Image 1 (cartoon, rainbow, N blue to C red):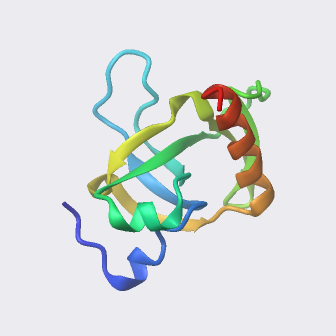
Image 2: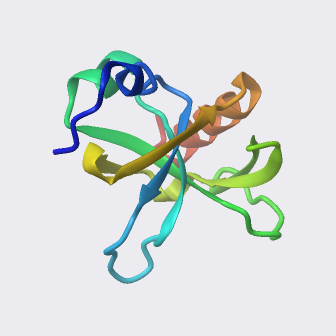
Image 3: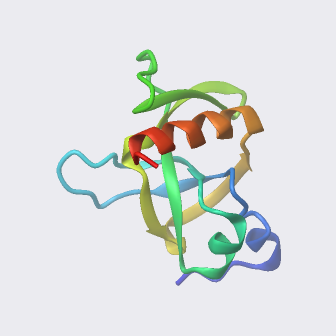
Length: 118
């Protein structure tokens, strides 16, 4: 397991965006190195060896809520691919990017409620 130093551990808050290596994958799973946003509660992210993430895409396709929702990441428009929610080991986290703005995080939260019927 990747050991996170104290500064990185503080970056495990809900809404943190990390470059994550999603390979290897199977079938239609979203793949390759891409930014992903942590969506679980901060204490869970810090306590567990895995984190729940939603991958982000730079696709020019229009959003199709709740499957994909428009968010802002790295100062650009992106799509959060909410039906590809997954748990990943912290060893897959490579580089911290930023904390996502609250409005984008709220869009993802509402989409996940619909995708998961909760």
